[in-house]
Length: 585
Image 1 (cartoon, rainbow, N blue to C red):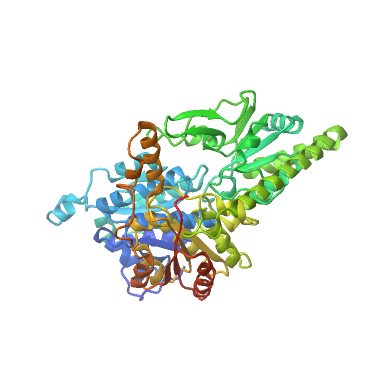
Image 2: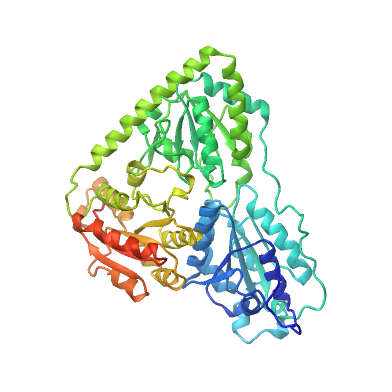
């Protein structure tokens, strides 16, 4: 790429990092400013021409979360820069969530100078670590701190390849402040244009895959459970083809949208039917237990919805992604058949095997058709029941959750819409039509993650005609209301619909359970959990950040018109917020 610099420009070592960012075609870099990367900052602006485009964030967690949401929505990594030790420590929580969610984020940082003679008193000392990557080594796939300019290119290539190889995850590269600020005195080779940036996807053992296909075809009530397959382009349609060929029910765990919820073979969230499952193929699944087990949250007792006789099989990356620090891999599930393999290759392979088997067996073809009809009927019953349930107390104030879900759907259903993170306790999945793979990049994660990730999803679609909607919990936004300024500053078009129950209600509900179990005062369960007295005025906060807003609204019949006004603002290319007061459950 041609740089917009004068002929007599002195090139600096930080310019090499910008060359690499250009080589790998990073579009954006999210930052919270810091002096430790002032050399790289100057290179990005004056040598690189603000490419990748810099986004200013009010907190490092927001910067990482924007990259997280962007990666979810596009399947491509985004860059972020965290200021020395303090910025890295601020960003730790968001990095951890990205790691457990397998999000490829290219995190850069800075430290030092490592040369003691060049350190400013105090600030450069207490902002410098012996090994800064220690702070995030337990939840990144790779970290490195190059000691010379020759190590910058090598570590950058390795970091990128590691980051995007499945199972994907964040990496961290730390650049010495003095290294950045030193003039470049020798040529540094860039990656060759014909070099593969990462290994090709991993194929699975064909003999094991054929056994799995035969078991799914001959089973009475087989399921495919899937969690991350939707992250790869084309996999949404591949899974539809595979499920239709096999005639199996599909349960989408929803860490990415893997399967259309209105497809006749979709039985996601149908716990009653799980007891009939005799064969389950877990396809790129980490969290199989939460979807298939009943938990008594008070006693912590666990009982499976699935029969003990059910035959479990697995294809994915399971053992390759296990670390030794966090227990995010969950409880071990014994399987009769297990194979390492990338679903983007495995699903077409399975489809081809199934088609060949079915072509020569009329009896199996009949069995598949009858099973497909049976699953389809159950699917229709399921959605009819949810539709009826949504009508309960529909006119009540504050709004019920299904009423809010329906109001938003009525406004956006004719748009080319995207739901960023939260699903309003699954009511969007029960009432909306998720018919395309980009409709929903995946479910919400922990508190203090959703606003940043939503901005990242909206950023990914900024230059398109898509309308991105965030159903935004109040407690989550209280962690980082400054993220609203970033949305306004960079004109990130996002329709923020507040899911405002004026409480950290998940924890409030836990206290209610404790009170009931112990016989203590249930009316005191809200203490330490509520967000009222005073109630935050999110519409005023949004206005103060330069954003269009309206609310609070707790009357159902007023919601639709407010959402339509907000939609027009978003379609003009700017963010908007509507504060809706809802019931707790």
